[in-house]
Image (cartoon, rainbow, N blue to C red):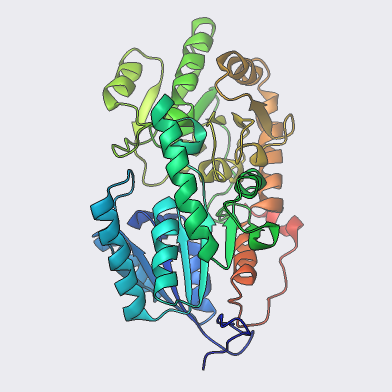
Length: 408
């Protein structure tokens, strides 16, 4: 039986009503990698979950099916604005909502948020939520000049229209929330919620011994706005005086992004000996275990998952004093913050670890403590359940934080 409030919105009352939930992402693998823990948490509450994204992806469909959820392929271009194809996406999503009759919709990343919310509203889905996991190149400076201004204007217009149809807009950092409120893309502070990123599994990512050789690592998509070129420039500067220091880069080309770095350029960096290019990794733990320090000089993030994974494995972090990034590091405690695009500051921060290796051990321990305090995936998911009004069972007693820090 469904329960409705005075405004007609579906209410999932604790201990009474189960819901059918549709979760929409922009690529299938993210449903497992970034939303997997939350999907399983919903299933444990007794809810039915339909997870949708562009496909096909048999591995994702099989994994979701094994959990008890269902994967649905939808047509969607991840990047760019193509009116004819985007209208096709909107219609396909409307048909999906009509067929599934969900009580709750959650979309994350720009197109699932924009077109998912509009389609859900048109299909009379009672409760609709947007999860803003990052603002992309339109807001970070990853695109150039006129193109960036046009992208930002168009993205703001689409957000402004679609977000007005949501019950709540959920952000992964306060900077993005303030920006959207200041630009009046959301109704007001009462329509906003904050969660600490996607969280990290502290049992899966455990501290491991540090390598003997000072080794830096960056993991991410090969985009300009990840600060990859600044990382390579810093590597050249440091290796000129410390050739024994290792710089590694792991990632993959995203040909649909306007900020993409050509793979030929990356391979030239590898061939000249500036960095070791590891390519795309299915499991980052081995690379993190062989690293001394994790580096992400990104221009802007939601909350960078790779940084949280590195922290959980006991690694210090050097990242940008930028939205999303700055929330993961207490400057001088578990790493260093550097200004966006400042290669000189990046060199100074990294050189601290070359000159004083004891910092790596001490700051790495602080990283593990900080991530256990703020970014445990279990805490993030409990917060999401409350925000979405999807809790159907009593809240289990919390695990003491000190016990979490000691685990691993």
